[in-house]
Amino acid sequence: MVDVEEPELPRGIALAWGVAANPQRGPKREMSVERIVEAAVDIADAEGLGAVSMAAVAARLGYTPMSLYRYVSAKDDLVLLMQEEATGLPTEESRNAGGWRAQLEALYREQVQAYLRHPWVLEVPIRGIPSTPNSAAWMDAGIRALAETPLTHDERLAVLLIVTGAARWTGIVLASYARLERERGMGDHEIARYEDALFRSLISAEAYPALREAIDAGAFLDESDPFAFGLERSLDGVAQYIDAVAGGDRPARAPWQGLDDAEISDDKRYREAQKAVRDAEKGLRDAHRMLRQTAREARDRRSRQRADG
Image (cartoon, rainbow, N blue to C red):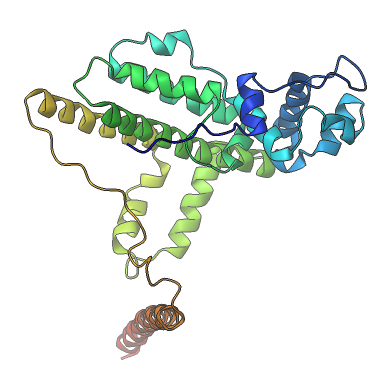
């Protein structure tokens, strides 16, 4: 194994772990990183992440923007600390919810709730493995939930990624619908009916037969939680895998997936050929659409001819 030199902590991560040096002088001693982060979170909760700036936070606290830089030197560091604050910690209830599955389901629900309370967190880009205390606590809780299973440590981490990924996707969709409810003044049932009607007007059985069948079956008006269903079925698969491993059967793991054509993706002629394929596919879709339209018109004409005849 190659020795890796211990990296120097970025300022934001050092602040999150409480190992960064605090300024000894400042405009007033009551200023602190905690107050700055709290004010920034309040702004983001009320107006969105885009409204957060050093100037806006300073104005809320009654200071000049330059005074904040003595404590938080960059906006990226501030956003990291905001995310850490908004994420919080998993509760003891989730840590003691029962078996591995009950604990993971509880962690999923708590993460979704955190996203709904602070939806702007979902706008923060993912930059590698979470490296702050609260995010580490969530990872620890998820891995700990699987400690009594025969899964290896990397398998436990993979299962945790299923849960956190499901929570994030659920949060994205639910937060988006909550925003629609506020903007349109509509309830969730009204939005569902509106979208169902919109889909019915756009999606034809000729062009999208399976999707149209789902629409006609009322799939988009179903009031059950599809995200919870998806997580439950995923955990069913994990349970089956745990049973298989306990019985001595550990299937081979798939490697990381990458871009299939990564080695040639920047080649000019290759990119031109890709564009030609996309254009041809679009032309084919347009031709099929025209064919369906003319077929409908032909049937209408034939029906009128029979009626007149």
